[in-house]
Image (cartoon, rainbow, N blue to C red; front, side, top):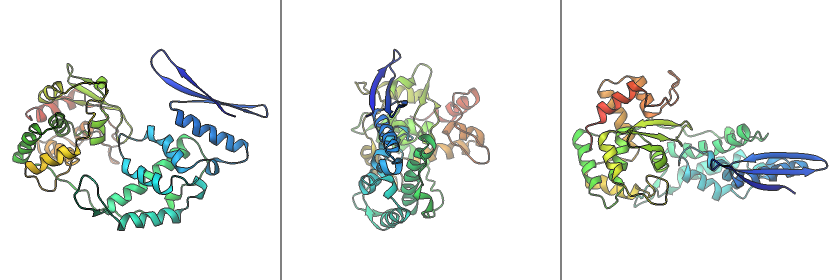
Length: 334
């Protein structure tokens, strides 16, 4: 029988220590969450009883272990889908044929998301994302937990995604969006929109931003949970700092504890914008920087991107040259 003990440290960290002893063999390991500790205990006990991870672990349990490690809020709806459809099944029971059937179901079944009033058929890119997220769960098991299990997602062809959708704003549209956001019933929306437009911050990164990582005096913020898993810093313009200074602070450590999608869609409608989504604010920053002659290297650094050709991986935007450029171009917004 596994014993799981909580250990607390002076710096506030908590770890769960698993100890399993059977037939004179002692296995011990520490984890950051109880869910990981319990899943590890089930796996080891299964191994000692002649069962491997594939027979001892359900997909839902593996998703629970993966959740703390996934980037920001990326894939939330996808993980919820797989948990509902295949969660109770043990990993060894899940086949590529099952996943292929769900891929086809996703592609042909209308879904309502982003507060759309009517259900819409998922795009090829969205269906592809569901498979990528499930594949990431299996990769976590093999690369991080070192489980020798097959990845059935690899044998399922992914829909070919269409070309990148780029939607930026004209100067008049940008002004109208900011004005509508400032008049919103949400006290958070104006700061959220301004922060997104001036830093290129992804929606998930914004909603996971902690006050502890925001330094208004220095004009910087640190993103701990990013899409690609790398911590990066962003520069805050004077107007953004002023907007953040007005936000209420409660018991929630996050700067933006409330979901802003509905308020954003209302502001977009009031601003008269067509075909404009939250992520397009990130595109707007990139195209605006490019239009001002900013180099590709500085754009990738400022937005936390990485490319195959330049192999840039989330350079900190607080570096002097990048910070100066971002503040110069973005400082007039708001």
